[in-house]
Length: 473
Ligand code: ADP
Ligand code: G6P
Image 1 (cartoon, rainbow, N blue to C red):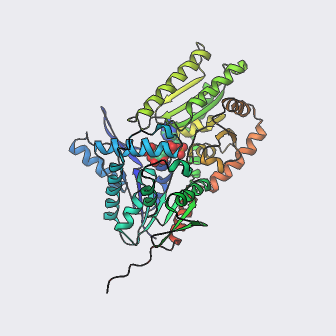
Image 2 (cartoon, protein in one colour):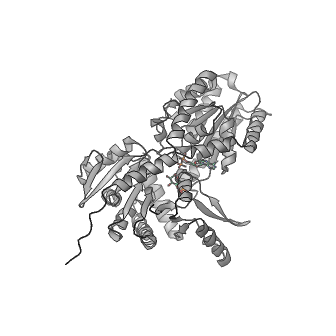
Image 3 (cartoon, rainbow, N blue to C red):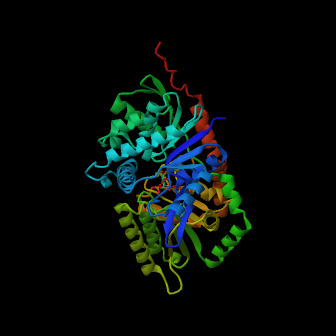
C-alpha cells in the first residue's frame, strides 16, 4: 500500500500557549476533523502549520515538536508576516470570501498575493523533501491552490490529488480575481481535483473553459501533455465513531441533564465556527421572528448556539462576533424572564463528547449557512441520533443539501421562511421525524469518511499519471 502524504494549511492539532502553559489541542473545522481518522490509519505523514509557536521557550518548543512527531505531523512554521499576509490576508480575506460569494468583503488592494505564492512554494519544498517514490500526495484546500503545480515541477512523476473543501464559485465570480489564471494553473498540477458537489465541478470546468480555453470532456481535461481528472466526492464523517460516542453512558447521562434542565421546553441547537458564512445572525433573527409572532412559544423554547472562536485576527470576524453578541443580548432582553432566557450563547470550543450530548439532546438542529462547501455538523447531528429522533433544518446553500434531502430545507435569506421551518420542525409529529431521520442516517452512515477517502484515492490511483520522462540520450 502506498504511503499517504497529507498536506493542508492547518495540522489536525494546533499549539495553544496561554498563561497556564503550552498545550497541543485538536483543531476545529471540517477538514481537520474529517481527515484525522484516515491519517491515524495510514502510515504516512501530515504536513501543515501547527499554529503560532513564536512565544514558546526552547524546552516548550522541543516538547511540542516531540508531540507532533508522535502524531506523524510535520510542522511548517509561519512567520508573523506570513500569518498576516498568506493566512489572514490572501487565504482568508480574498479566497475565502470569494469562494463563498462575499465578493464585497475582498480588500481593494491585492497586496498579499506574493506572500501567498511564496508560502505555497515553501509547502511544496517541504513536501518534496519528505516524498518517497510511490507515495501518494493529497493536498487540501484553498490556502494551497498553487501547491499542486509547484509539486509537479519538483516531482514530475508523483501522484498528486487536490481537494477543495469550500465551494467553487461560478466563473462570473472567480474571474474577478486578478490572479485567477495562476490559481487555476496551480490546481492543474494535480492528477485529480476533487470537490464536494457536481455543481462545484461544473463551475470549475466552465471557469477552465472561459479563462484558460480548456475544454473538459466528461471528467477529463488535458493540460500541458497530462490528463487531469475532476470529480465530485462529497465528504463524510466517521459516522460509526459518532454513533458510538452518542451511546456512551457518560454522554447519555449528559443528555439526561440537558433534558432535565430544559424540562417543559424544546431544545433548539446551532453548532458552528464563528464565521460570517454560517448565517448565525439570520438564524437568531428567525428565532426572534418566531417568538415575536407566536407568543405561545415564549418561555417554551431554548436555543443553544455554540460558536467556536475562529480567525480572530481578521477584522470581519471581530465585527461579526460583535453583531452576534448584540443580537443575542437584544433577543434575551426582549423575550427573557428573570428565570429564563431564550438564547444560550457559548463562545468556545466543545469536545466531541459534549457535542455528541448536545446533538442527542436537541429537538431541532439549525444548520443554516449562507454558503458552505459541505457542512459536517449536519452529518454529525444525524450520526449522533441512533434514537432516530430530532429534526434537521438545513440550508439549501450547504453542499450537504445535495445529499440530505430529507432534512427540512430552508433558504437562509428568507427570514419568514426560516421562522416557518423552525416552527414546522418543532411541531413535526414523531412518525415523520423518525422516517426522515432514518433516511438521513442511512445516507450519512453509508457515505462516511472512509467511503470518501477510498473513493477519492481509488480514483487518484486509477488516473493515468504523468507520462514517463524521456531521458536525453
Ligand atoms: P467548517 O469546516 O466550515 O468549520 P463543518 O461543519 O464542515 O464547517 O465542520 C466543523 C467541524 O468543527 C465539525 O467537525 C464540528 O464538530 C467542529 N466544531 C464546530 N463547532 C465546534 C465547537 N464549538 N467546538 C468544537 N468543535 C466544533
Ligand atoms: C474550513 C476550511 C479549512 C479550515 C477550517 C478552520 O473547514 O475549509 O481549511 O482549516 O475551516 O479554519 P482555520 O482558518 O482555523 O484553519
